[in-house]
Image (cartoon, rainbow, N blue to C red; front, side, top):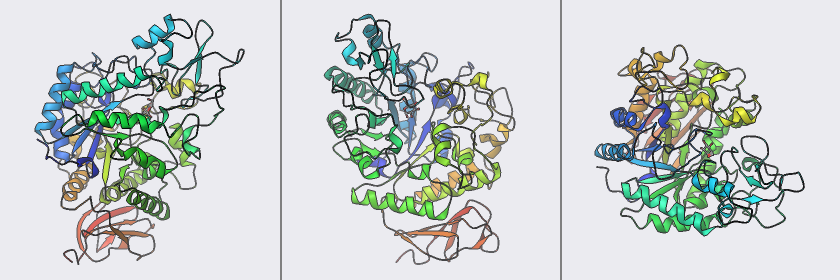
Length: 542
Ligand code: GLC
């Protein structure tokens, strides 16, 4: 069983499983829950503390499972409720906690509530669970945009329109409706009763909307807005009352459940509000994920984040990759002068990608992230150093971004290709059959089997880093920055862990200290370019 620890998430390393792409137990080409259970020893061996399981609920897959038909059931292609129970029990036996995704902003358009809304007249209580409005003549009710491209409004047969901030198959719920609030309290209880330890809250900043007439204009998306709590769509102050309600439900349990908020806000100090003890407990910090490779930028985002979290009485929750962005082994290969933000958001093809460089930088960035105080979320396959698969044939693409951009932006499928477990075999050990997205040539060389026990492999580096991390105290936020060799970032934690990253183009001498781990071979006391190392500061017992 996992150690009792009332704030375990503060320092946890959480591994995100995107179930359709992790492991396929029945050979249908789609990963499933029994597949996850069958591979738990890999995760236990990696040394993680918890799993975040992306949606496994019944879904027509208009948005990779984030379009949900029934929040309290399992998609038959992925298993059964018994499989969930087995997975929870098997994870807990290994001391691994389990977090499940909760997607409150919208349902699938196939959800019984939405079907009922479509079959009901304008103004009916069935429509009031969603956001139905009359248009402005032939125009949609407002200029709101979908995150996946195009208008956020779709017209239905009787002429009304409904709001969808994501795909049109994902109608937004109206969170001012008490029935919606009650429904999700029930969903939380349903999974908490089964023993899940926490929840990852999808698009947490979008639930509260200003729906007073006339609807206010907001033609921009949340990421770049100067949000202050009054935007009509994003990060509104009243969203917090929703999560205070959730906290009351979390606290019905012993131990109380936690949640981690996904918010895309440029204003860190506002995102911390979601993590208050009276709300969810944790919020992703995407600043490292959004940072371009470079000493100044990395140092600045880390300093800002640490000081912001400290002021808020929190520890940061670091992320380098997830199922929505190009994997960091590809993303970090970008030249700093390219436009990483456009690439990050669009998932398009990055210019000037050098895979060796990407792999090198990714390993260094990972060592840096895992040396920082707080918690870290890993995305399945990053421990193998997987790149984004950039050249998927367009015929296999499934991301709504691809369709809503009229085939101009490939979207996020490139980071969702099923994992390679073995060097060879029909789907490289993913399952006994095929794989719902094709694995590229050479993927087997990055497989678990190819890296297992290999000194210097990415998998070995992650294992070593997670093992060593336990010797230190990630709950202690105190760090010092030490200047030294040009191009070398060097931070030292109060517990004696020192992390150096060489951003220079030549090897640089390591500072004094006992070398614990390096992302590339250290020769004659020199750390190669674009590499990182952990050292034990000599005065570590002081
Ligand atoms: C979140 C998810 C993403 C999904 C979107 C809509 O950002 O991480 O995958 O497409 O919400 O649910």
